[in-house]
Length: 320
Image (spheres, rainbow, N blue to C red):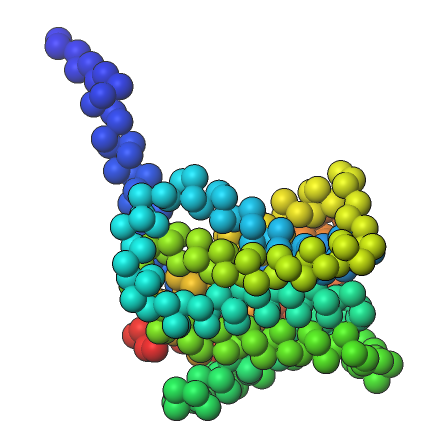
Protein backbone atom coordinates (compact mmCIF):
# COMPACT_ATOMS: atom_id res chain seq x y z
CA UNK A 1 0.00 0.00 0.00
CA UNK A 2 1.54 3.35 -0.99
CA UNK A 3 2.38 5.73 1.80
CA UNK A 4 1.79 9.41 1.33
CA UNK A 5 4.76 11.36 2.59
CA UNK A 6 4.40 15.08 3.21
CA UNK A 7 7.60 17.02 3.55
CA UNK A 8 7.97 20.29 5.39
CA UNK A 9 7.43 22.28 2.18
CA UNK A 10 4.04 20.58 1.70
CA UNK A 11 2.94 21.31 5.28
CA UNK A 12 4.10 24.89 5.48
CA UNK A 13 1.46 26.45 3.19
CA UNK A 14 -1.33 24.67 5.06
CA UNK A 15 0.02 25.70 8.45
CA UNK A 16 0.62 29.26 7.30
CA UNK A 17 -2.88 29.38 5.82
CA UNK A 18 -4.40 28.22 9.12
CA UNK A 19 -2.45 30.83 11.10
CA UNK A 20 -3.41 33.58 8.66
CA UNK A 21 -7.09 32.60 8.78
CA UNK A 22 -7.08 32.51 12.58
CA UNK A 23 -5.29 35.85 12.80
CA UNK A 24 -7.68 37.43 10.29
CA UNK A 25 -10.68 36.02 12.14
CA UNK A 26 -9.53 37.64 15.39
CA UNK A 27 -8.39 40.91 13.78
CA UNK A 28 -11.70 41.27 11.92
CA UNK A 29 -13.79 40.60 15.03
CA UNK A 30 -14.45 43.94 16.75
CA UNK A 31 -15.55 42.34 20.01
CA UNK A 32 -12.32 40.35 20.30
CA UNK A 33 -9.99 43.28 19.62
CA UNK A 34 -11.90 45.70 21.86
CA UNK A 35 -11.95 43.22 24.73
CA UNK A 36 -8.22 42.67 24.23
CA UNK A 37 -7.55 46.43 24.27
CA UNK A 38 -9.35 46.73 27.61
CA UNK A 39 -7.28 43.85 28.97
CA UNK A 40 -4.07 45.61 27.94
CA UNK A 41 -5.21 48.82 29.64
CA UNK A 42 -6.32 47.09 32.85
CA UNK A 43 -3.00 47.41 34.65
CA UNK A 44 -2.02 50.88 33.47
CA UNK A 45 -3.50 52.84 36.38
CA UNK A 46 -1.95 50.50 38.93
CA UNK A 47 1.48 50.63 37.28
CA UNK A 48 1.25 54.39 36.80
CA UNK A 49 0.46 54.87 40.47
CA UNK A 50 3.17 52.40 41.57
CA UNK A 51 5.98 54.27 39.79
CA UNK A 52 5.01 57.64 41.29
CA UNK A 53 8.20 59.11 42.71
CA UNK A 54 10.36 56.69 40.72
CA UNK A 55 9.85 58.01 37.17
CA UNK A 56 8.55 61.55 36.45
CA UNK A 57 5.17 61.58 34.63
CA UNK A 58 6.27 63.21 31.36
CA UNK A 59 9.37 61.03 31.25
CA UNK A 60 7.32 57.83 31.44
CA UNK A 61 4.93 59.33 28.88
CA UNK A 62 7.86 59.83 26.49
CA UNK A 63 9.18 56.31 27.11
CA UNK A 64 5.68 54.93 26.61
CA UNK A 65 5.74 56.00 22.95
CA UNK A 66 9.45 56.04 22.15
CA UNK A 67 9.84 52.28 22.62
CA UNK A 68 6.93 51.36 20.29
CA UNK A 69 8.35 53.68 17.61
CA UNK A 70 11.58 51.65 17.46
CA UNK A 71 9.69 48.34 17.55
CA UNK A 72 7.34 49.32 14.73
CA UNK A 73 10.15 50.74 12.57
CA UNK A 74 12.02 47.46 12.91
CA UNK A 75 9.08 45.24 11.90
CA UNK A 76 7.17 47.47 9.45
CA UNK A 77 9.69 49.73 7.71
CA UNK A 78 8.44 48.90 4.21
CA UNK A 79 4.79 49.61 5.13
CA UNK A 80 5.78 52.95 6.68
CA UNK A 81 7.77 53.99 3.60
CA UNK A 82 4.97 53.05 1.19
CA UNK A 83 2.35 54.82 3.33
CA UNK A 84 4.36 58.00 3.85
CA UNK A 85 2.77 59.94 0.93
CA UNK A 86 -0.67 59.34 2.49
CA UNK A 87 0.63 60.50 5.87
CA UNK A 88 1.99 63.71 4.33
CA UNK A 89 -1.24 64.29 2.43
CA UNK A 90 -3.30 64.03 5.63
CA UNK A 91 -0.74 65.60 7.96
CA UNK A 92 -3.31 67.84 9.68
CA UNK A 93 -5.57 65.09 11.02
CA UNK A 94 -2.56 62.87 11.76
CA UNK A 95 -1.00 65.63 13.86
CA UNK A 96 -4.31 66.21 15.66
CA UNK A 97 -4.73 62.51 16.45
CA UNK A 98 -1.13 62.29 17.62
CA UNK A 99 -1.51 65.24 19.98
CA UNK A 100 -4.87 64.14 21.42
CA UNK A 101 -4.48 60.36 21.52
CA UNK A 102 -0.78 60.27 22.28
CA UNK A 103 0.69 63.45 23.73
CA UNK A 104 -2.09 64.97 25.82
CA UNK A 105 -3.88 61.78 26.86
CA UNK A 106 -0.74 60.02 28.02
CA UNK A 107 0.83 63.06 29.70
CA UNK A 108 -2.34 64.13 31.52
CA UNK A 109 -2.99 60.56 32.62
CA UNK A 110 0.37 60.13 34.34
CA UNK A 111 0.36 63.65 35.79
CA UNK A 112 -3.07 62.97 37.26
CA UNK A 113 -1.94 59.69 38.80
CA UNK A 114 0.79 61.58 40.64
CA UNK A 115 -1.86 63.47 42.61
CA UNK A 116 -4.76 61.08 43.11
CA UNK A 117 -5.58 57.46 43.93
CA UNK A 118 -6.10 54.46 41.67
CA UNK A 119 -9.65 54.13 43.11
CA UNK A 120 -10.57 57.69 42.13
CA UNK A 121 -9.19 57.19 38.63
CA UNK A 122 -11.05 53.88 38.23
CA UNK A 123 -14.34 55.54 39.12
CA UNK A 124 -13.71 58.60 36.95
CA UNK A 125 -12.52 56.40 34.08
CA UNK A 126 -15.95 54.77 33.98
CA UNK A 127 -17.26 58.05 32.56
CA UNK A 128 -15.17 57.72 29.37
CA UNK A 129 -17.82 55.80 27.36
CA UNK A 130 -20.30 58.61 28.07
CA UNK A 131 -17.70 61.21 27.03
CA UNK A 132 -17.00 59.32 23.79
CA UNK A 133 -20.67 59.27 22.83
CA UNK A 134 -21.03 62.94 23.80
CA UNK A 135 -17.97 63.90 21.72
CA UNK A 136 -19.34 62.10 18.66
CA UNK A 137 -22.73 63.77 19.06
CA UNK A 138 -21.29 67.27 19.54
CA UNK A 139 -18.57 67.12 16.88
CA UNK A 140 -20.06 64.86 14.20
CA UNK A 141 -23.77 64.90 15.11
CA UNK A 142 -23.75 61.15 15.73
CA UNK A 143 -27.14 59.65 16.52
CA UNK A 144 -27.40 58.42 20.12
CA UNK A 145 -29.59 55.37 20.60
CA UNK A 146 -31.52 54.78 23.81
CA UNK A 147 -30.24 51.20 24.05
CA UNK A 148 -26.65 52.49 24.03
CA UNK A 149 -27.32 54.83 26.96
CA UNK A 150 -29.16 52.05 28.79
CA UNK A 151 -26.31 49.60 28.25
CA UNK A 152 -23.66 52.08 29.36
CA UNK A 153 -25.70 52.95 32.46
CA UNK A 154 -25.98 49.27 33.42
CA UNK A 155 -22.28 48.59 32.88
CA UNK A 156 -21.42 51.80 34.77
CA UNK A 157 -23.29 50.46 37.80
CA UNK A 158 -21.30 47.24 37.46
CA UNK A 159 -18.03 49.19 37.44
CA UNK A 160 -19.02 51.07 40.60
CA UNK A 161 -20.01 47.82 42.33
CA UNK A 162 -16.57 46.34 41.62
CA UNK A 163 -14.37 49.35 42.44
CA UNK A 164 -16.28 50.03 45.69
CA UNK A 165 -16.29 46.32 46.63
CA UNK A 166 -20.06 46.44 46.82
CA UNK A 167 -20.06 49.18 49.46
CA UNK A 168 -21.63 52.19 47.78
CA UNK A 169 -21.02 54.18 50.96
CA UNK A 170 -17.42 54.46 49.79
CA UNK A 171 -18.60 57.01 47.23
CA UNK A 172 -19.58 59.44 49.99
CA UNK A 173 -16.06 59.25 51.44
CA UNK A 174 -14.21 60.06 48.24
CA UNK A 175 -12.15 63.23 48.21
CA UNK A 176 -11.44 64.78 44.84
CA UNK A 177 -8.49 67.04 44.16
CA UNK A 178 -6.38 68.61 41.42
CA UNK A 179 -5.22 65.19 40.23
CA UNK A 180 -8.80 64.13 39.60
CA UNK A 181 -9.40 67.21 37.46
CA UNK A 182 -6.33 66.33 35.39
CA UNK A 183 -7.58 62.74 35.06
CA UNK A 184 -10.96 63.96 33.79
CA UNK A 185 -9.18 66.18 31.24
CA UNK A 186 -7.20 63.14 30.07
CA UNK A 187 -10.42 61.20 29.59
CA UNK A 188 -12.07 64.06 27.70
CA UNK A 189 -9.05 64.31 25.39
CA UNK A 190 -9.19 60.55 24.75
CA UNK A 191 -12.90 60.82 23.91
CA UNK A 192 -12.08 63.51 21.33
CA UNK A 193 -9.34 61.27 19.89
CA UNK A 194 -11.78 58.37 19.52
CA UNK A 195 -14.37 60.61 17.85
CA UNK A 196 -11.81 61.81 15.26
CA UNK A 197 -10.45 58.32 14.53
CA UNK A 198 -12.95 58.01 11.69
CA UNK A 199 -10.89 60.62 9.81
CA UNK A 200 -7.52 58.90 10.03
CA UNK A 201 -5.78 58.29 6.67
CA UNK A 202 -6.07 54.90 4.93
CA UNK A 203 -2.66 53.58 5.94
CA UNK A 204 -1.44 50.33 7.44
CA UNK A 205 -2.33 50.22 11.14
CA UNK A 206 1.35 49.97 12.08
CA UNK A 207 2.13 53.09 10.06
CA UNK A 208 -0.55 55.01 11.92
CA UNK A 209 0.76 53.87 15.30
CA UNK A 210 4.31 54.73 14.26
CA UNK A 211 3.32 58.30 13.37
CA UNK A 212 1.21 58.57 16.53
CA UNK A 213 4.22 57.48 18.56
CA UNK A 214 6.61 59.85 16.76
CA UNK A 215 4.36 62.85 17.40
CA UNK A 216 3.82 61.88 21.03
CA UNK A 217 7.48 61.22 21.78
CA UNK A 218 8.72 64.41 20.08
CA UNK A 219 6.18 66.67 21.79
CA UNK A 220 6.67 65.24 25.29
CA UNK A 221 10.46 64.83 25.15
CA UNK A 222 11.30 68.51 25.88
CA UNK A 223 9.16 68.36 29.03
CA UNK A 224 10.81 65.08 30.05
CA UNK A 225 14.23 66.70 29.64
CA UNK A 226 13.02 69.64 31.75
CA UNK A 227 11.85 67.26 34.49
CA UNK A 228 15.27 65.64 34.69
CA UNK A 229 17.11 68.98 34.41
CA UNK A 230 15.30 70.38 37.41
CA UNK A 231 16.37 67.43 39.54
CA UNK A 232 13.60 64.84 39.26
CA UNK A 233 15.19 61.41 39.48
CA UNK A 234 14.65 58.45 37.16
CA UNK A 235 15.34 55.37 39.24
CA UNK A 236 16.69 52.42 37.27
CA UNK A 237 15.46 49.44 39.25
CA UNK A 238 13.88 46.13 38.20
CA UNK A 239 10.49 47.67 39.09
CA UNK A 240 10.89 50.77 36.94
CA UNK A 241 12.40 48.87 34.00
CA UNK A 242 9.56 46.33 34.00
CA UNK A 243 7.03 49.13 34.40
CA UNK A 244 8.50 51.01 31.43
CA UNK A 245 8.42 47.86 29.30
CA UNK A 246 4.83 47.20 30.35
CA UNK A 247 3.45 50.67 29.62
CA UNK A 248 5.25 50.88 26.27
CA UNK A 249 3.98 47.48 25.13
CA UNK A 250 0.54 46.68 26.52
CA UNK A 251 -1.28 50.01 27.16
CA UNK A 252 0.42 51.67 24.18
CA UNK A 253 1.39 49.49 21.22
CA UNK A 254 -1.02 46.57 21.66
CA UNK A 255 -3.96 48.38 23.25
CA UNK A 256 -4.02 51.26 20.76
CA UNK A 257 -3.65 48.89 17.80
CA UNK A 258 -6.58 46.76 18.98
CA UNK A 259 -8.72 49.72 20.02
CA UNK A 260 -8.21 51.58 16.74
CA UNK A 261 -9.17 48.45 14.83
CA UNK A 262 -12.33 47.97 16.89
CA UNK A 263 -13.41 51.57 16.33
CA UNK A 264 -12.70 51.15 12.62
CA UNK A 265 -15.01 48.11 12.49
CA UNK A 266 -18.03 49.22 14.54
CA UNK A 267 -17.57 52.92 15.22
CA UNK A 268 -16.88 54.85 18.43
CA UNK A 269 -20.32 54.63 20.05
CA UNK A 270 -20.47 50.84 19.99
CA UNK A 271 -16.82 50.57 21.00
CA UNK A 272 -17.09 52.89 24.01
CA UNK A 273 -18.81 50.46 26.45
CA UNK A 274 -15.90 48.02 26.19
CA UNK A 275 -13.85 50.40 28.35
CA UNK A 276 -16.00 49.28 31.27
CA UNK A 277 -14.23 45.92 31.01
CA UNK A 278 -11.02 47.54 32.32
CA UNK A 279 -11.89 47.46 36.07
CA UNK A 280 -13.39 44.01 35.59
CA UNK A 281 -10.11 42.71 34.17
CA UNK A 282 -8.21 44.43 36.97
CA UNK A 283 -10.30 42.61 39.57
CA UNK A 284 -9.88 39.27 37.79
CA UNK A 285 -6.11 39.71 37.45
CA UNK A 286 -5.90 40.59 41.15
CA UNK A 287 -7.66 37.33 41.90
CA UNK A 288 -5.23 35.37 39.74
CA UNK A 289 -1.92 37.01 40.68
CA UNK A 290 -2.67 38.35 44.16
CA UNK A 291 -4.78 35.39 45.29
CA UNK A 292 -7.72 37.65 46.16
CA UNK A 293 -10.97 35.79 46.78
CA UNK A 294 -13.84 35.95 44.31
CA UNK A 295 -16.64 37.74 46.16
CA UNK A 296 -20.33 38.20 45.49
CA UNK A 297 -19.80 41.82 44.42
CA UNK A 298 -17.35 40.59 41.75
CA UNK A 299 -20.03 38.30 40.31
CA UNK A 300 -22.69 41.02 40.46
CA UNK A 301 -20.39 43.56 38.81
CA UNK A 302 -19.36 41.04 36.15
CA UNK A 303 -22.97 40.30 35.20
CA UNK A 304 -23.91 43.98 35.11
CA UNK A 305 -20.89 44.95 32.98
CA UNK A 306 -21.32 42.12 30.49
CA UNK A 307 -25.05 42.81 30.20
CA UNK A 308 -24.45 46.51 29.66
CA UNK A 309 -21.65 46.03 27.14
CA UNK A 310 -23.72 43.51 25.20
CA UNK A 311 -26.69 45.89 25.05
CA UNK A 312 -24.69 48.99 24.16
CA UNK A 313 -22.40 47.40 21.57
CA UNK A 314 -25.30 45.68 19.80
CA UNK A 315 -24.30 42.70 17.68
CA UNK A 316 -26.03 44.16 14.68
CA UNK A 317 -24.85 45.69 11.45
CA UNK A 318 -21.76 47.83 11.53
CA UNK A 319 -22.55 51.50 11.97
CA UNK A 320 -20.19 54.37 12.26
